[in-house]
Image (cartoon, rainbow, N blue to C red):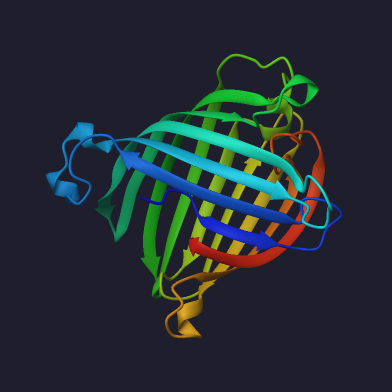
Length: 231
């Protein structure tokens, strides 16, 4: 099934004008259709894979600037009611990120992460808040200072409706260096405007360091528009 959002967005820029992402997860044990009360603890183990492609489609040759490969293994705590219409869930897992390049352009890192998620409904809108923390495992000789730019903590949030406008945002920050990044996406179902089109209109903005792993220590800002299959 889908894991992270799946989309393609474009915005005029001197580089990296196009960003494409697809993401899938697989439940290792049990029946994926079983309800929360029917699951065994072992049924909450997943593997996942996310890939991001950054392109400059104006280039006459070799338009792909960078590709990030991100496999994961994690345990998913299914959301459970904790009172007052609020649910609590989360993840604990291992993640590998690399760009597949060699030589001086090689980038990679491994980390262990924890991400609790708090969700609640208010005034007909669903909201989630997801603080996260991680620790790096080992060091890569080509990006040993990556924690200076990607930090050890992050915060994600969503606000909106599955059948209407939805805002998602994600950030990461290094308290030691003061560097980090913020990314936000505004999406809306195209089917609300044109019958028969089960996709979403995307508007995405990014500012900060390391939108892709190759440029982990370079600051950039981008605004892009496109469509998404999953948000």
